[in-house]
Length: 384
Image (tube, rainbow, N blue to C red; front, side, top):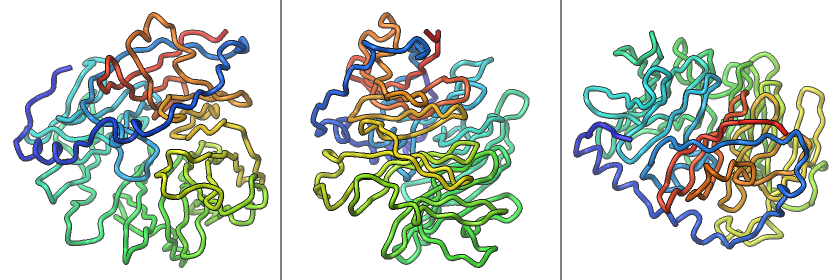
């Protein structure tokens, strides 16, 4: 895939961020997940693998497991895919398969795409300056019209954006006096702390927003952290009163939160007092739950240690398990995505993480192809 040459400043900035690809996964001990493919039921989806791009980025920047700024590949409901390389971001458009948007001759990085094809982008203006922008898709392309959201600089608390929906509501978090605080941005009101209009002073991170405007994340109170869901009409609901439903018991540390359009939350946690906190998560055992705030129920689900990055409206979960891309259909065991692939399309590939899934079951992620990081598309081919 060919991309335009960008300015020397941007190249130096990005190169400074470049880490060793082995940094995230090389220290992970190899733990085999049981091979469920030998006993797959007839309804399990099969896929073919499609290469999208050579990213030249390492896993620590491509992963979608972090609440920090992500460069993970994302697919929207129309099958448009965004991704990032060392030189900048790209989008796949029907009329032009490989397209690298530019602003004044400088390529940008892409961090989100909604159902309309509108982009959430950052433009690096130097080592200490970065601009967040909303870039709408108009007439099949990206023109000169853009909405400025915020310029990041080192002299003030800055928001990291984590998501947005088709209605133009953006979510993120800002670190103030050492504590993260969830924020919301709209074109009409700009940035506002989440819950401000109801007199709340929340701490934590807003991680997910759905098309109904519900926002999910994890609180960060001084003595407690717990998943939450927020909507302007219904207010705040936290997970604290449901803790007794979690198994095993102990000092719970919540990790992943993904949100469906019917307001179901899937999450993971680990037990701090039963595991070494100094292993950087390498040896942690993760447990999973499903929380339905609308009816007040919580159910433990056995994901065999799978981490969660995304979920679609059919509750198809995607993510990873110790450096292996995973998928989990409702009420079935998780399985390595590579076990569901047409082997003719898998040669030379090691699929590391599935980062995004749409309602058509199309999955994107990243992996190694002949030892180099690439973005992939897992295209459903059949069921049974």
